[in-house]
Image (cartoon, rainbow, N blue to C red):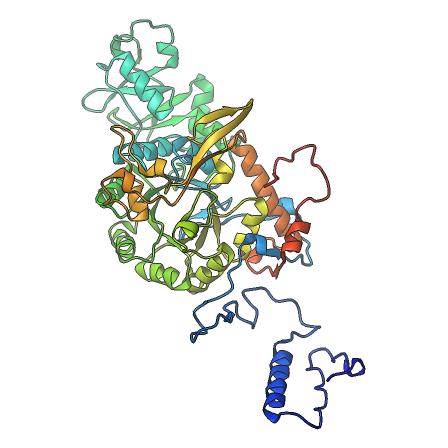
Length: 564
């Protein structure tokens, strides 16, 4: 028996002295005790050594858990999620406002704000995608709609902003005012160039021309402003174009070739938007970036090729389980077909082996998350998944050596969770519930007891997987149930609900990036790449309770915190 007097403090970095053995006792038991003490001293960290991150610790996360039985590896590892860890503060000279939040979405695409909106039918359609790109992130259009409609939304995003519109929407002199009005509404524009059958510019029609016209059946030729118009030649500089717009007090400047044929269009709103949204995520032609989800079902290839033709920048092969031969084949096939023009992302996964398989298939980024979402029931219904911090760490271990970014998808409740996801090694975070309550989301606005909410549902919910009259559901194959013909035989892996209305997206993004910048300041991380080197501390339930406001009744709500 070791007495109190024998508890000698060890020298830092050295094993504590082993107490003398008792002169009697079973020798086998004593030998086992010596072995345990020796192992304990080996694993005991030095008091002078800096604290280790979860990823860097010499003690692996995959700690075998005694379960009984004969297979010590049956329980693979201890799984950690956002509420299980905190980031350790570190010496810092980083001012949050000056932190660089830019990060890789894919191998080729870098976002100024590392946030992406989720491909869900209550989160991202064209309006959300436009707002996300203007905020410095990117939107991923959901696929629970016909192919033509999804492609049309891609076109809407790509035409919403441009340094010069190289393929402007036009009309003919014979179109009616009603047809022009419909085209303007579809593409959210205020006017159209008018061209003849040969493509020659013959006029322009704008809202001002149509505003007081009662007869919507009139042809454009009777109302348009006829040529000659103020135009510019191909190759005009931005400065010269802006000068023409100012000098002639016009809002649209058609670009024509030497034969008077329309080749482009420059609008004053594009100059205004460039100043208004300096962080905008744009392609080489000055158009907003947009992603779109595809599946692996019967229409998947047709959908993907149609989206590519519409101008999509990123295709996400979006399934609940990407460690599947059909998904891997789809990623590989897409990369071979359109990899030079469009980046391909594979997801979702939760293990190192699955991430490695996607990397081998050619994915430009890997999306991580099996069951962490607030509206997802996969972990309960199927009993399958992995806590998100561990899932990210495992995926990063497979992806980082090959320069493949990781997208953390799901489980994010607060801005601090975004910081934790990036510190675990993810390059960007995909948001669902945090954005579902914004004005730009397509979810229905609901009033309950005088308060505003927006509908929000998982893509594995019954509502998302069931058809509505003539409207077909395109969400079933995400959960590999596209062969289920009877809707009462569907096995949902999600729920339907509502989230509080949060107002404009810009306000929400400001709070989320503000929290991320604060984390970068606390950890001394000037860039996202430096934040990925930050260290975690694992906490207990008491630590989590202490982390939230406690011992008080909250009387004024904060814009970035809510009680659960």
